[in-house]
Image 1 (cartoon, rainbow, N blue to C red):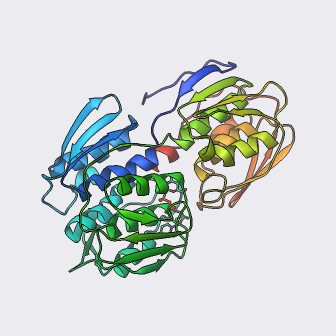
Image 2: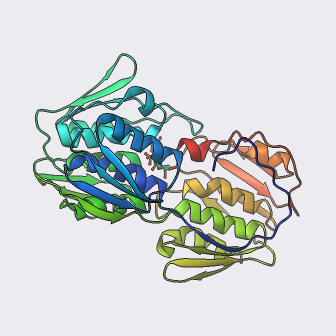
Length: 378
Ligand code: UD1
């Protein structure tokens, strides 16, 4: 829910239960992938967020029929899409529109999509995406006005080593390779749960993708993908955020519709901090009524501690009993939120990619300008 202003009266001990939505980052890979079939796809557990609305708008503008069946289930048929360029104005609103490069290339052997800009996290190159497309035989150029164009006579499978572990490049290469001729091998691939979810979705359409979730993904190209019904995994970061909220407020929250395995990097740290975490089949109970133990955290690609949980865990560590050190291992600039925590009394010093947090007794109320649009921009 986007409001212009939030007024939060504390302190509150958060108790109760919450149901987690489908994963944003999985949805952003899966929705463009419906382009790869002319048949109808039913996608369940789609989160109700602005990025998804933009993705659906792009699909609709290009000619797909998109129908909401219930509050989180969409029926999409992309057979009406006959153009290989994404609508510029709307695609520019969201970085993840670059997944249309891989999807359109996979369908038409050509694609034109606006170039994604940088953001609060610093410079965000897409050289590994381009390297992947070129390895599959595409020519990639950047036109005036920042439109990326990729074009191939025919996409041919190839071996691609990613110089850096990139979620986006791994997804984009999978999308382009799934219908390419022959075998594509992505080495040093990202292993995030949403990569596995995209591969499972495509395999349910008849693709032949093996190894998703490991650092070597093998994609044997198929000539045809059919429609499917598929349910998106729960959002790891939304769940992790409620886990952090339970701890920071010394509360007790039953978090439902989660995959506990995806939360393990977060759970492991909370356990080390003395928090009680009980795992069930598809829910997790987090409670904290005593001291929060200090700890050090370094963010890494999955299965490391997720960078998208770094601000939330920093807020928790502000309330821990001692000094904690957070090292950002993925993005060059991810401590922009610290000034806002300082207004509330946090004792944090930042040097480059390292933040040193001295625990305090409690936060105090303060106006916040909320400049941290990191989650929105990602
Ligand atoms: C995705 C997530 C984002 C998360 C990030 C890391 C989506 C929509 N967003 O972003 O929430 O924070 O993974 O878990 O899924 N890099 C290059 N060249 C490239 C691509 C990336 O150098 O071609 C670098 C980036 O600058 C960054 C690192 O690789 O330092 C990881 O980026 P990447 O995994 O690609 O992040 P995104 O897919 O953009």
